[in-house]
Amino acid sequence: MNFDEQAFNARFQELLREHAGACDIAVVEAINEQVRKEFGIWTEPTLDRCSSSQLTAVLIRELAKLNDAPARWRLFREHWSGCDDTYGHRFEFLSVLPRLVGMTHGNDQDFFDALPSEFRVYRGCASDRVHGLSWTTDKATAVRFARGRRRSYKSGRTVVSTMINKTDVMTVFHARNEYEVLLDFTALGPVKKVHFRY
Image (cartoon, rainbow, N blue to C red):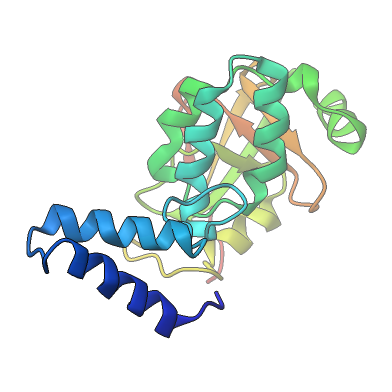
């Protein structure tokens, strides 16, 4: 972010002097917050101003504010693909998202409609993150995620597979050719490991 750091510091010092050089941390934090607002420096991440690692928590917060299910789904679909590391928030997503299937369109709806009533899904992930929201109908996509292009998996890497019912699908995403299926992981039956090469 480009801003005049010298002017920022001068304004901070000015307000600090007005409070007689207060050493109370609460006063200093309040002054800092005021100056940040004056200079247009955002302090709380928003959907438009956050990193991909912050987006998941911000999205959940914004979804929880909406009472209208179609509005929730539009917001979710717009931002989901930018979220990183959603595993720790999977129960929160389940609590704020109803089934989305009737609100998909285009290639996503075609992909969903073509799925049989029961089908196999795969998940490539860290070994301790098997029961997540995001799965795929494509084994090669799961293997790519298991190889962990974006992060190291300290607990090891795995690809797992299970059969699911179409009724357990929350939504699908076909746009990135990942054949992504978001599902209610609490309804999963037994999963089995799939052999793959690192």
